[in-house]
Image (cartoon, one colour):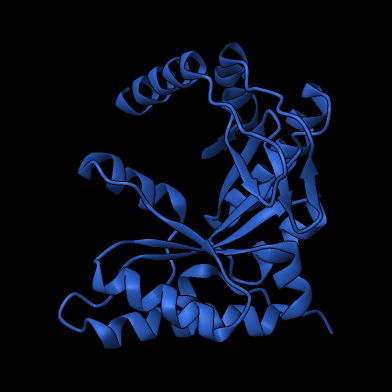
Length: 223
C-alpha cells in the first residue's frame, strides 16, 4: 500500500516564495534553524514567535536519519499550533519546513510527498550542466505541489553532517541569471566566502561578488 502524500498546506506551513516576498517588501531577514529534537524546536518557535519573526525549520541528513518522515511532519504541524498558542492574537508566525542539502532527486521527492514546504537540492559539486539538469528535475516535481525549491551554485566550505568542502568555489555572478532561468529555482544558495558548520580554516569574504549578486537579485525581484 502506497503511503499517503501530504501537502504542506495541510500542516499550516508556508513556502519560501511567500515568505521571502514578504521579507523583501518589509526589509527584514528570515532566520533558518536546523533542529534535531523536540527541545530545539520548542526553543526556536518560542523565540521567533516572541520576536514576531517568520522562521524556516531546517532538516539535515542527520535529522532525517534520527527521526522518520512521520515524526518530522507532525513536529512541524505541532510547531505551527505551538506558535498560535504563544501568540493567539496574531495566530502565530509563518513557518516553513525545509530540506537542507538534499543530495538527490529521490530524497527531495520523499520530502515533498511528506509535507515539506521547501526543498534544497545541492548539486553544487557537480559540473554546471549536471547541476542544472538535477535541479530542474526537482523543480518540475516540487512545483506540481506548490513546494518551492532552493538550488546551490558554487561550493560553501565547511562541514555540515556529511556535506563537506575543504575549499571555496566562489559563485560566478555571470552564471547566476542563466542558472535561475534554466532551472526555475525559487531561491539560490551562493558561495561568497562564508563557511558553515564546523571548519578548521579561515573563511574569506569576497565583497565584489556580494555586490554583483545582490544587484542581480534585487533587480530580478523588482521586475
